[in-house]
Amino acid sequence: MSSSFRSNLNRKTKTTTIKERSRFLLSKMLSMIHCLCYIYMMIMANCLTAGVLAISHTNISTDQSALLSLKAHITSDPQNILTANWSSASNSNICNWVGVSCGAGHHRVTDLNLSHMGLAGVIPPHLGNLSFLVELGLENNSFHGPLPQELSRLRRLKEINFGNNSFMGTIPSWFGSFAKLQTIKLYGNGFSGFIPATIFNLSALETIDLGRNQLSGSIPREIGNLTMVKGIYLDDNKFEELPNEMGSLVQLEELFVQSNALTASALVPVFNISSLTILNLYGNNMSGSLPDNICEHLSSIRIFNFSGNQLDGLIPSKLWQCKELREILLYSNNFRGSIPKSLGNLTYLTKISLGENHLTGNKFGGIS
Ligand SMILES: *[C@@H]1O[C@H](CO)[C@@H](O)[C@H](O)[C@H]1NC(C)=O
Ligand SMILES: *[C@@H]1O[C@H](CO)[C@@H](O)[C@H](O)[C@H]1NC(C)=O
Ligand SMILES: *[C@@H]1O[C@H](CO)[C@@H](O)[C@H](O)[C@H]1NC(C)=O
Ligand SMILES: *[C@@H]1O[C@H](CO)[C@@H](O)[C@H](O)[C@H]1NC(C)=O
Ligand SMILES: *[C@@H]1O[C@H](CO)[C@@H](O)[C@H](O)[C@H]1NC(C)=O
Ligand SMILES: *[C@@H]1O[C@H](CO)[C@@H](O)[C@H](O)[C@H]1NC(C)=O
Ligand SMILES: *[C@@H]1O[C@H](CO)[C@@H](O)[C@H](O)[C@H]1NC(C)=O
Ligand SMILES: *[C@@H]1O[C@H](CO)[C@@H](O)[C@H](O)[C@H]1NC(C)=O
Ligand SMILES: *[C@@H]1O[C@H](CO)[C@@H](O)[C@H](O)[C@H]1NC(C)=O
Ligand SMILES: *[C@@H]1O[C@H](CO)[C@@H](O)[C@H](O)[C@H]1NC(C)=O
Ligand SMILES: *[C@@H]1O[C@H](CO)[C@@H](O)[C@H](O)[C@H]1NC(C)=O
Ligand SMILES: *[C@@H]1O[C@H](CO)[C@@H](O)[C@H](O)[C@H]1NC(C)=O
Image (tube, rainbow, N blue to C red; front, side):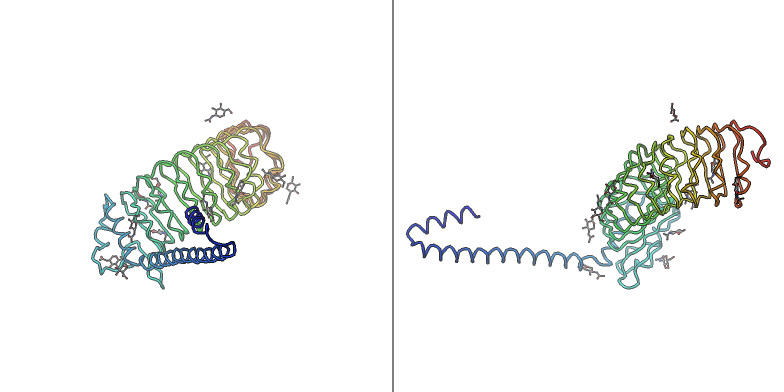
């Protein structure tokens, strides 16, 4: 456009004086600016109408067709729950359907909870049209197949529970787009590969449960960004390391990484998390000894479970400084030496399990 304008200008200005020429140029430029402004306004107007249309075009009917699409993708409904209840009649009020809840004001679907119904099937892309959805619960069913990327449009989601289903493959990186997500439960599926670092972009996350999958590798350093997280459950996977950045999870209360392939270096960051109450690392491949000052930062710890590793050395003599301790589970390791008598002044202690080690001397109050 600009080059044809320029050649046009050249042809026309051959016979004009310099004064006329500059006046011509000025008016041409003004009309060009006008023209550009007009184009810009047209584009803006189009954008605005498109925006308004998009909003006015999604209504309760959109939600209904999304749910009916889901129903059409259910291959097994042993208790006839959706079959009987989710009516396709156009006057059926979907807000009364089993497992569906709507917002009080806007009457759009906010909760979809089909947990424990024995359903099998795949998730259709249409589900991504439930744009007011806050909770999506499919726990303990037999949903399988890929998760459609259209789900990433559910920007209001605060809770996703796909626990105990048959989803496979890698965890999609677009999980990072749920800016308001507080709870994510993908436990008990067949997810494999690495955890995508984008998941740790979810700054509102409080609970992350990826237990009982086939996940492996290192846990991304970005996990240290989850400053709101209170519970991390990664049990029964194949993780090998916990990154040092976990030391900055100042609200973390429960960390479950039992039955993985963690090595000794996993212990370095966790001893810094002063909010921890339960630390469960049993059944890993951790070796080396526990530091004597283990309690220095762990002032809230209630349960240590380090059973089933290859830890050695002495039981830390300053363990009595973890005043809140209820359970000390060091069963099946290579600890040696004697049991520190000072453990006797842990007021809340109810359980101590030290069997299958190389400990000497008096058994502690008849406890194995
Ligand atoms: C929803 O929007 C569609 C398309 O604009 C319209 O045909 C339909 O009647 C609307 N439904 C309701 C319940 O408002
Ligand atoms: C669907 O189930 C809900 C809640 O159990 C009930 O109120 C409603 O009447 C049922 N609708 C149909 C068509 O069965
Ligand atoms: C979903 O429904 C089940 C019972 O079917 C219930 O136990 C669970 O708390 C519900 N989840 C949510 C998030 O409402
Ligand atoms: C989970 O689903 C299985 C199989 O359908 C069922 O036996 C079990 O009772 C369910 N668990 C819960 C807590 O509903
Ligand atoms: C809903 O989603 C599907 C698939 O993503 C799409 O084809 C459809 O046009 C969307 N809109 C409505 C109003 O159903
Ligand atoms: C998930 O499945 C396991 C094993 O089948 C079962 O023990 C557990 O109760 C299920 N959890 C829920 C919440 O249904
Ligand atoms: C990370 O979060 C920001 C803000 O919530 C968002 O704009 C961005 O798209 C997210 N990045 C990824 C990779 O999901
Ligand atoms: C997330 O963590 C990485 C690595 O620890 C860091 O470089 C990045 O700045 C963090 N991002 C946000 C949004 O905090
Ligand atoms: C643990 O805390 C100490 C002192 O507060 C600090 O020097 C060290 O770098 C921290 N280590 C990790 C892995 O966060
Ligand atoms: C545990 O670690 C040792 C060496 O550190 C290695 O030889 C062994 O294969 C590991 N075992 C498992 C189950 O990862
Ligand atoms: C601790 O580890 C043992 C295995 O030695 C396991 O059976 C038990 O359930 C664990 N206890 C807790 C409270 O996690
Ligand atoms: C607990 O035992 C240690 C070591 O024997 C001792 O120094 C400490 O004063 C005791 N604490 C209490 C509250 O008795």
